[in-house]
Amino acid sequence: MSAGTSTNGAQHNVGRYWTARLCCRSIRSILAAVSLSTVWFIVNNSSVVEKNTTHMGAPSSSSTRLSSNLIMAHKDQYWTKYRSQNLPLGVRIAFQLRDTGEFGIRTDDPCYKEAEDKQRGWNRTMHLPPTLIDVRSARQWEAGLLDSASKSSVGAQKVEDVINDRGGRILDFSTSVATDLKILFLGDSVAAQIGRAFDSAATGVPDVVALAAAKEGGAHVNSTILPPNPRVVIENFSVGGMVRDCIFASAPVRGGGAVAMWRVVKLLSMSRRNTGTCNSPQGGWNEQQLLNILEHKYNDPKRVEENNNNTVSKIGKFDAVVLRIQLGWMKPGAITHEGIIETIELCRTLIGAQTVVIMTINFTNDVHNKNEWKWAAKTNEWIREQARTINQNATSNGSKFRVLVMEFSDFTTQVHWANARTILAPSGSDETYEYSNLNPPNLSIPNYELEGEADFLFDRFKMWHRMNRHPHSIPTVCSRMGDKLVHKEENFERRQCERNAIMKDGLHWCMTSVGPRYHAGLSCLLGCVYNDAYEGSTEYEDSNSTIRGMELCERSCNEQFMSLRPIDESWLDQGNTLFSVPGS
Image (cartoon, rainbow, N blue to C red; front, side):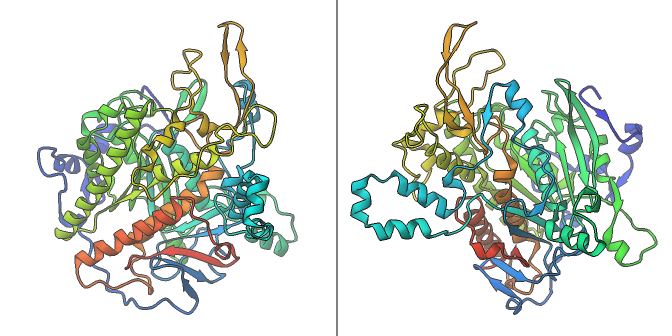
């Protein structure tokens, strides 16, 4: 392939695989079934899933219902084994929340890279701003903004109460995931880094397990007692002298499932089949790539526990695809409604997904002006409406195919807003702020991110060389502004700043900071579809109720995790496992 090289040691004849049977249907027959001249949602026998008839009642005494859709189980045996069935009965995806660093998660994309930052002339803090740590830190910071008269008017005791109230975590926690689902991340380099981080959350070992293993064996905790990461890079490519993942598969993850990533830098389309792949501006894909992912073999813990003579399984097909729309590689005008619908349909027919999770288009360097930001908001609203339509049509046709919307844009806009309020001015004072008049966002206003006060997002560094065609938004990447630097060669002043611990470069994320909420949010959303057999779920009498229950669950997950709503401290207690269920 022109844009990448296979790392699996064997090159197979594409034509031979083109006629191979896959998931009881050949890829040729699947591709032949996809016709863009017909209604996109094709219903066939292979896509219909029978309604689960498992008895559903009230949550068991060993669990607590935190909301209508979120349940917390209190059982220490979950997570005590590695990559085995660590899930409550009837639950297919769950997660645990702990203090930052408590889970021994290997982070592939650390935001703080001293050599790389120095090469770019950046200093970077490793600390979150106070508005993004926990409620107590945020309130302490807010109290510090009050002048003497204001503090006197609210009363000293009230200010003291505000400071002493911890309240809950915002970004300062870590997340670990267990699932028997097979999940594929599809998109560009952002999808790749999120996929790697989610895989780490599903394969990292809680330190309590490592400590117990060390104590039992009389050894010190070190990497030798941690199970190896099951991730296999199936295909990679080189760019700028660095090797990047194009396709990886990781199986089994904790719970027995799989996590994979397929880098396709434009919307998945039949028109781009067999064109340049991986990092090619053509944004193509080919059937050999797809086969390499679906045919990936691994030791299945279910078969091991059943003492099955054959312990090897193939991924075969994915339960869910997480789609990051590739703004940047594609201009807004090229991201059409038809293109998004085709991508969703190919996720179903080619990849075998029963569920597609679409991340809403968030603010990055690739949103160049206010008109493009309005376009993103309008497109996100269309995605929400289309998801509802698809789900209703699927249900009417007896299919359980679902499209979920992950409110990633809302979450990250709130993060940028909270960070911007704490960016220190270059005066050297710790009490002077770059955006001193910026108020918290009014989340009750529809499209609050488009209101006049949100113009701060477009406060950008100037373009100063040809490689800086997408200058960073200051509120997204900075923690403290520096003095202006006179660029000697170009003879103009250039602003600079100390970088924050939230965004790596205005496009990619510091996943140790934003990842925990992302992982919890995605796990929660998928539970709205796949945890319907849990005893605490609601039994539905008709399909319309099923859709309503899923949508209510989806909304609840987004409101809790794709936001800055605090995480209750009790959720982080040892032995607590969280999962969502559909219901009213």
